[in-house]
Length: 419
Image 1 (cartoon, one colour):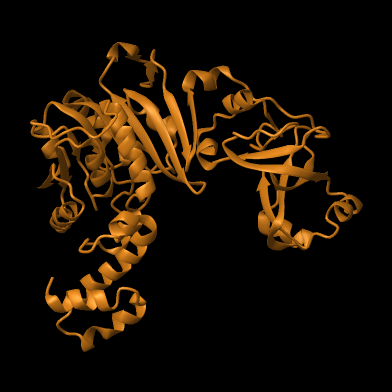
Image 2 (cartoon, rainbow, N blue to C red; image 1 turned 90 degrees about the vertical axis):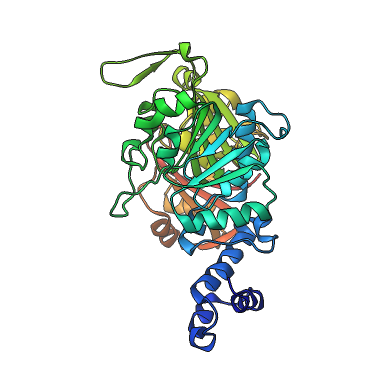
């Protein structure tokens, strides 16, 4: 990067890149595409990667890579997960081994940098694209990573040459050659269902990062050594699905069934994370539990709860119902109610003001004085937009209305305010 480009980035770091794009002819000595990537990237990093944004000299990738990379919050979670798997209460000292942690699909290097920094062991970043490797070398130096090895190459070929690892991290691409999203692990690149045995012959644990759009039940059924499932949400938006495979205690694993689905003697643990909220249960708990259903009158119910996005994705409603003594409005509504407040409920909590049917007089009485509200629908025939138009309510305010279906199949509005 020449001096003119550096100066341009520094002088225009807060400017609109859409306007700057028209200045190429005015600054012929500036590498304009690169400069725009840096200005746009740092702006995104201020929100997504504040530690990186606070450092001068970090090289940012093109816009699509910035959109797809992990946030600092999710990367820190993975770093602590890696430390737990390695049994490290604090970062360890420099290790004599060639490497103990390997990221086979390095990308922009966000996950690698946080995990390697937390572990403190010699770590290898592998990436096929040379320009990302060059950026990684520069960035890892700026971040103070002393034990990082940057290798430009195919992660699968590199895997063949490795041994005696503690941890492998892999983030397979979830789109096909046409750019369409895939729904099966077998369709991801690389295919971790084919690689799992080799990875576990080289490392004690493997962490696979997947799209939150994938069905975690199906993903688990396609692999033979999954011990943990982590569903990670940020600000109640599901961001990542992590699967932890372990080569340890393999006696817990039984042979595959006739249809190819793995039978597990050991118990699968599911972690539902949303910011500071954490809900952990085991697959056996889910299978043994059942949801308590609320009476359709709701007369004694004073509080309503909406599980966070990770719990909605996990589907462990029976465990949730039993652990917090909360009742679900109906089998498919996924909203819970209780008589007494539940302070630790992992989701949003509301105090019920009124429950209204769709009788015109009843609606008029319960909505009297309400001109705007936050509306959500759960197991309900109308969309939010259709319902808002019918109720003639503006968006926003302190009132939260949940349109849903009760256990007797009646449609109601549960009018609430935040607890």
